[in-house]
Image 1 (cartoon, rainbow, N blue to C red):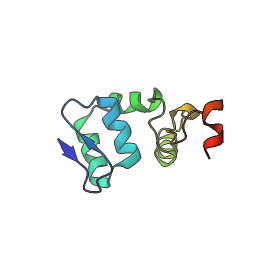
Image 2 (image 1 turned 45 degrees about the vertical axis):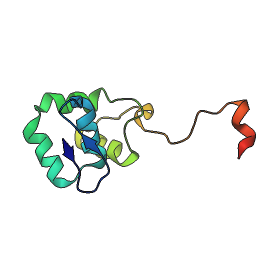
Image 3 (image 1 turned 90 degrees about the horizontal axis):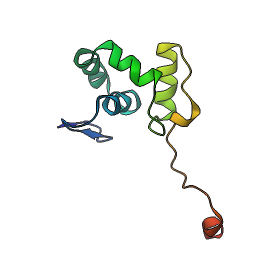
Image 4 (image 1 turned 120 degrees about the vertical axis):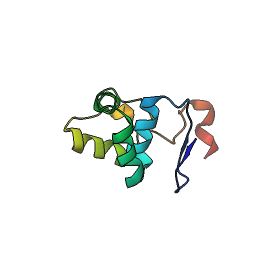
Length: 93
């Protein structure tokens, strides 16, 4: 199991490749970044960016990937902490 020294995220042997790569872009340290490039083929990293997981990217990770690969990621790639709105919960605030 890999555990980030900053305790932002954890992965194990069964963590899907695309999830791991996305987490490194969003939360990874420089050491994790270098390890990712040594551990995964460039095609896997490019696939994680060209076909991003919906709702899994931080704004900073998305901006970094867009800059590095010179492609726009869709807005639905950004994670959201806001619950879905509906009439039953509107008056709770």
